[in-house]
Length: 85
Image (tube, rainbow, N blue to C red):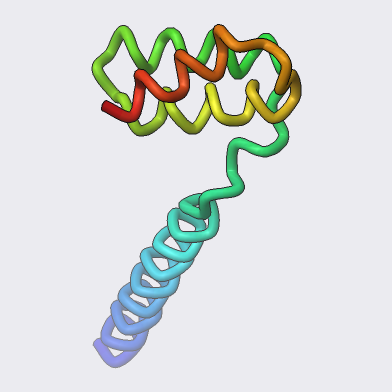
């Protein structure tokens, strides 16, 4: 009986630790620089998909990244500005 009681304590402790770890992982990837490791064409495609899904903030982030890679392309700048509306 006592062994079962301690076993339940250990199981509950492990549940709490795993929940805390999952929350930490979620907040680790929630930073603004998460999109910095993307490619130019990947950013354009992701921006188009986000815009199609009416996620204008995410689309603007991807278009802004693509605009940083190719600042002379006026079309990308226009897409970035239009996504912010």
